[in-house]
Amino acid sequence: MIPRRRIALEGADLVDALRTLWVSPAQAAAQVAAFEQAFAATIGVSHALATASGRDALGLILDGLGLSAGDQLIIPAYTLGELVPLMRARGIEPVPADVDPQTFNVTVDSVAVRLGPRTRGIFVVHLLGAPCDIRAICALGDAHGLPVIEDCAHALGARIDGRAAGSFGRAALFSLEATKAVAAFGGGVLTTADDALAAAIRARLAGRERREWPPVRKMLLKFVEEAAVRSPAYGVLARLMFSNRRAGGFDRFYRRAHDRVRGTAAAFSAFQARVGLRKLARVGDRQRRLNAQWQALAQQLPSRFASQHRDTLGEAAFYNFVARFDGDIAELRAAAQRHGLDLGIGGEVMDDTASMLGLADCPGAAASRAQAVLIPLYEGLSERRRRRMLDILHRLARELP
Image (cartoon, rainbow, N blue to C red):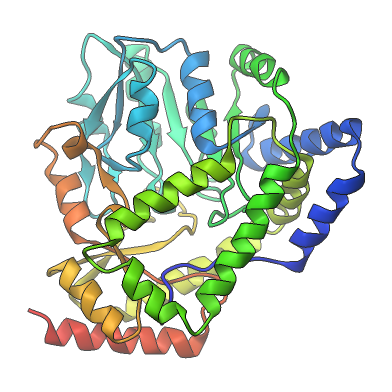
């Protein structure tokens, strides 16, 4: 079975974990500070603050900007659904703006029509590494006195007119989970050029306990997970876990399990800082290599697949390869599994937040969720497996109704 995802694990990750045994608190703080400085320089902002996760960074931004109960926040109608309860827990009402199903991103027009008297901010996502129209959206926010928050969880390395994604809004968030460009086994980064906002958030982070072992434990679990994916038994496991009947339940279980491993919000660890610094230094080479593979795959797909339009507004970063399929995606996934290919569909790609919120007026988001298919593309995908995958997709494109 060709898995939909693989985790790029390295022996150096284990070495960095072992160094945790003799790192003093002062050394740990210095290593985290060095990572933050390097990250800020990469994005081109004055402040980068390491956090427990991307979602933790978003919560800190919302609190730092003073959003509270009764306020409305514009969000994309097609994004990670777990962000909705995070906002609702603060009493903030998320208001979904529709997306262009070709880019999967909001547009300045779709955001503008959602503005209202209780709107207090605009939250945009550079989905799957494709830059959204951030300049126009920031201009819209400025015209209405609204802060713009950038979600760059997929977009480390994306650039607009030579400027890094994450440097346009009042603040931005990045994720360092195991499948991201800088995989530090959890954690996130908050970036901003606003000195007052950075100072307020840093004061809140200062009170957190630094715990080194939760991310080390997460790394060890990732090694176990990757061993399972590489084993001959994975084909059987994938058919059990990702059947059309069970996939949704497994996805929810997997996310809850990750939340338990992540634990409560703690200070970013020195282990994560060491891993992050090492991988941050190589992120440009990684992007060039995987973006070239993305372009090659997009050109070789059968005509029933439409790859994401990702470079229309800037230089995209690589995250995953997602295309829209002209047909029944559940039937496609079931047929692909029978041929030894694992695809992600529906909520395994992204969520229709408009539907989650009881709205039926975002056709772009509905179409995206109904058509989007995650196709394997990652570090370590061999040329032999890539050719086999394309053969399967071309065959199914001919055979399926």
